[in-house]
Amino acid sequence: MLISFNDLPGWHDDTLLSIGPALFHSAPAVLCNENLKQWHPFYHAVQTLVPNQGNQENWRQLIQRYLKPYQNSCDTQMHFTGYYEPLLRGSLQQGGVYQTPLYALPNNGDFKVPRAAIVNGALAGRGLELVWVDDAIAAFFLQIQGSGRVQLEDGNVLRLGYAGTNSHAYTPIGKTLIARGALSAGNVSLQSISQWLKDHFEAAEDVMSDNQSYVFFKLLPGEDGPIGTQGVPLTAGRSLAVDQDHIDLGSLLWVDVPHPLQKDTNLQRMMIAQDTGGAIKGAFRGDYFWGFGEHAEQCAGVMNVKGRCFRLLPA
Image 1: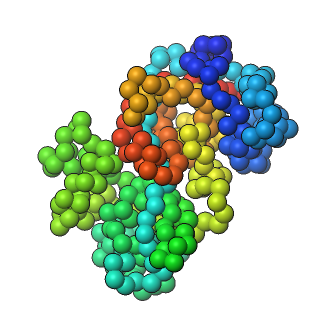
Image 2: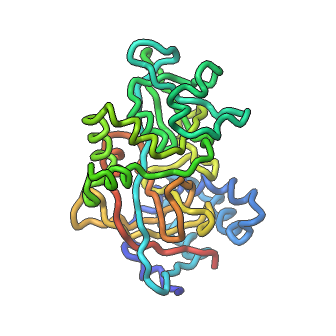
């Protein structure tokens, strides 16, 4: 259902100037995609502005000129979770506390074996180890997040991005722990799952391997941020992972969703579909990228809420 921009909750409160860099990242990816021709006039106009400079009203006027907001006629709410860029500790050599490898993507078909086989050494010694980390549980959550940083002993930091999977289906281990009676449905978060795994370390790998999916990584250059499925750096608070069978990457959406930590506060802002995820399936599913750092981890770990999402489509 077509609505006016004034009907978007918080439309005049969002500091749209901060969305400029995210739009600039997406512009080349959209403009080279012939299947997204309807978006080309908007992104051509985006490239005429300067990110992080000028009057934010310039961005508001550009969006209002080229796009129209739509609300779901059935007012179906969207299910939002969150993700972030974690920091692990590691070494380029196996030894001491550094015993858990993070692998590059194999190119000979061996990657189709389940997670448990890989953890037990199916790929060992083939030169695929990118780095060794000191925490198997943290390595597991890094695979769920899809990207992250590893700080080496000399202070240098490696940036890792998603490279592919072993082609096995993703199973949320929160569901596994609920089924085993280890956690209640109302007490499932990244933090509660991580704590349970640490408290029951002997059983942790068995639980983690209930999810047979395994994620491989590649080294990322630069400092712009993790790379999403669209092939562009993600922007904290602006990038949204979606199911691209239902929402085109590069599309703009307006969200109105409860803040995971701040009671009686809603996040009301413009976001861009720039990523996907193994658990993000369906037209009403979104994963909110929180960025890097402790606050991002806290927010992403507990975010599991329903909120409103409005589509902005070319006029």
